[in-house]
Length: 353
Image: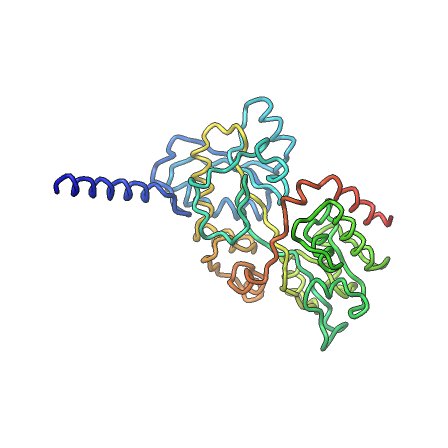
């Protein structure tokens, strides 16, 4: 009997100990990093300021000294790794980089050290967690379509039913998420994509016609909306929000909005991986994400976060149950694996060939 009781107590203690060790997003042990220094690298400006504001509690509670660097440059990170002197501990990158360079520039993450339970499904990669969310969506000009507006990406590509000038992102690299939607609009499938499907999608985009406007910067897309030059415009949700605030007479289409996210990563060769994990785990917390969103207008990636923002900004947040249900999580790994081919065909498209 005593042996049974002892065994039960031991089992309970072990379970309690295991549960106690499970990380909780947004927490860090008080004073656990006192005397240590971490360097956080991102893209600067208001965004990085907002990220640092979100990490203020991490600094105060852990006792860490947090340095800020940037902008993120993969060549610079590669040089640090080659010299075995990695000074960046946590790095914010774009969508594709952690997939293209997983295991070479960026560590494969040990998810037992992170609480990812509040991140929307499909957004955790083998070498990254999301830094924030925003939408790549399209808006339509109210005066053009009036009582028969487009409802989804198939309508965006239907020039017979919905004629008009399209505005499309061309900010420097192939927009895999758009090509994927074009493949679907052409009758293809997003399941088991093959390299041959890339041409199908590119040709569908090409079929929009010669008056398609390929914008290069977010400012340019916003100007297109505010001037009313295009009838449908692909836009980043932040720029779309700014255009609507400035009086652009357009309505966003949220069905199958394309998930875009900067990625948070830990480089290969960091000197203190556990400290880097501690920073990441704190950043994923509800309060940290609310601060980030309030400071930057980007959407938080914690599903329970409720940032206090104005009405129009709130309408463009992507973390509500309704918006998450409408989202389209494109096959980032496929486009990372096939980047050279996609880039070649995309360049031909935007150059008019």
